[in-house]
Image (cartoon, rainbow, N blue to C red; front, side, top):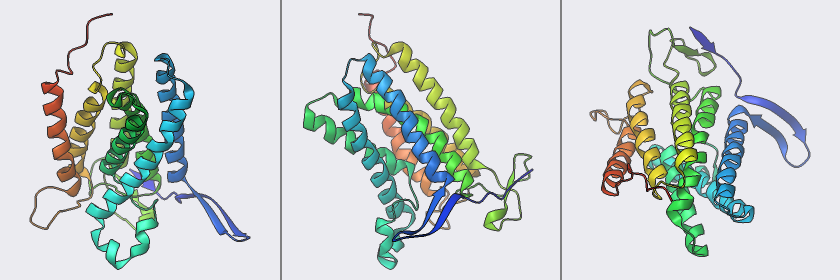
Length: 266
């Protein structure tokens, strides 16, 4: 049994001129490390495809902005809709609540705008970005663990964690760590599959593989997470409801486009 009593603030500098207090949180640090690591991996694949660094460096700016804005606004709309009217300041508080479903949507829009503007291949670019995006999942979930947030339901499992800093006295599933582990497995699978076959896969394959693998596991892990009900009588959580359409779309397109078949060697 583990007791989680870590202060989510890693470093705090107070009484600074003009800005006052600056805090560095584990979550923010891990989010930044995830973006940097994803950047390096994606850049290596773009170089293999002989794209200049300049194109990728401009693309990543679009992606980071789209990722954060999409994750923020989808969280607000589906998880905190009342706060939009009751506490409008939440609209600009970008770090407080990020939904993975929104991050996906924001990334899609960002890559589409970038490739459309420069007349580049949308699906080819999205596939490469997907590899880095998959790696961000473990970093973000570890950050959630340090924040003692979105933890699981009460359990008597030996894996249970008491989130003491949140006032909890009963062990709960460390669902953040479960998702971190799943994210690592998905990333490794996608990374090595893409590294071996990137010349033969059909554009769109990696994105739809990620869509299927991540949101199926996300749907299943919701059963051990703290219940975020759509309503008191509804059997599924909000996370599950948002995941189902993505799973259905992913499976349908993957089969229809025959993404499971590699192109012949060239």
